[in-house]
Length: 155
Image (cartoon, rainbow, N blue to C red; front, side):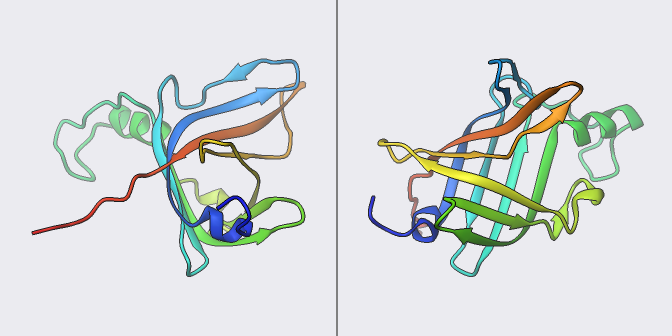
């Protein structure tokens, strides 16, 4: 598997292990708090989907899309991120570019999220971004995943 092209190695669903913003100075921010949950999926059809959630989310008063109070709805939106769209792989840069077609954050639709890809010996996947400023400090997104084990749907 280690000699397969990057686009083949990315295929499938990867389960989130950690989501941090890392600075060159070693500072770390956990945007979804400790122990976030989520996944990224790369399909053979050239489409991807990313979803991440805080580990402990507040329930709505009524379990329907519009059943939460304003505060509950705000908390739900701030504790969840999702986007999907087509992706392309750049083997030379070991990178994947994800075109945001659908997103919880409407301003991101049309953006391209470039992520540098690294695999470790245990078949783990790390995706990281170019540095960007938060205040006067430069950070990069760092997402670590492990391969989702195959399951079968048997009757």
